[in-house]
Length: 171
Image 1 (cartoon, rainbow, N blue to C red):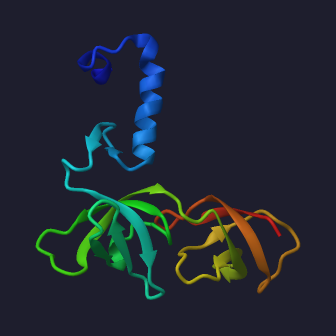
Image 2: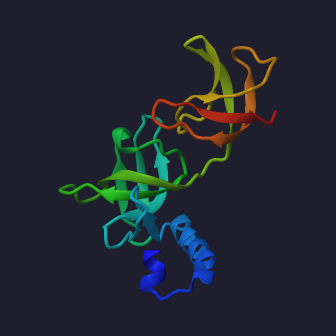
């Protein structure tokens, strides 16, 4: 509503504006806050780039614009996975090579499928990715699998906090 009035956009063009804003968010050019406000990432000092985690649990993001590389400690990954396009905030007071950053939001998932292995976790059969750069447990609905089976899966939802993700078995 605010934007329609400020930019003098007619109500009939509201859908077009929403589509355009969604595309800008998807491309990481603007940020949609938790309060549903659109924010310029430049104004907030935020950066976008692909996350490349290490098997030890930390990762690196190369800023799409400046090519600067940011070190992302494990505690600052915020459920981001290998090759995700992420929005990060540089950590104040940390500069030089591999300045530290913190993931604010996953803009686009980089991994849509993976090979995993079934394991028991708290008495339930789950799938864990074989790639150590992918994190978290995944639930699935499929009968006939046993512990140790390897499967190719498509991710339907990613883990968030302690909540496991969900996958669909492809083969």
